[in-house]
Length: 115
Length: 114
Image (cartoon, rainbow over all chains, first blue to last red; front, side, top):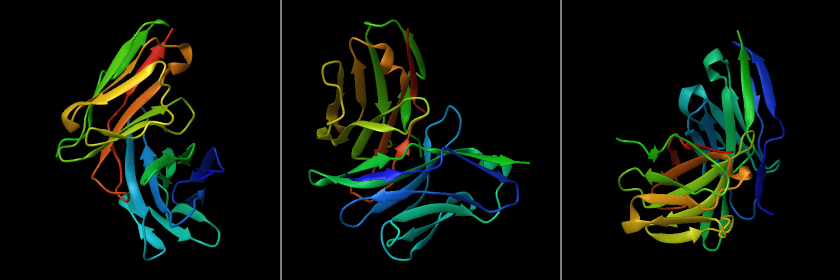
């Protein structure tokens, strides 16, 4: 089955340290990969996406993600974490279904940045 | 640019009652999605529209859930009768036509079924 997985329920990091939120995928064909962030009682906000081209994708708020085809991964990274980055992060993949591509989300990873 | 509008933000009902949620997507966005997000889980797609046609509704519990998108703009999602396990946040999202575009989400409608 085509899917996306986030192996960590929670990631803890100290402010100023680099952060990584992991995502792996399983799809046939070329994957269209996305990261979204969700703050409490809000909808999801788009951070960045990989469609084709350069494996390192830069997005909003200083976040970036690296597409690794051999490891089927699309990990979210930031060089220096801020307390305000604390939120839920969702990886998503567009999954081919009946001629269209259905956005499918992982279960989410809670990022907690400690002062 | 106005974002995706949803209402109501909060709704509390008793089981076996009915409820309806409304969504107005971003102007010009042909594709509209309804997701169910249960606490502690990722969003699960219920139905995807392109203009006013259904692209995918394979995970929509059709015995109790229904959705429509009149004139390819606004959409309503209805639950009748509601069950306890329907307690969740119902997220509406829209995107430009195509397979590679990102989704723009509304703030969601939180349903509590007692």
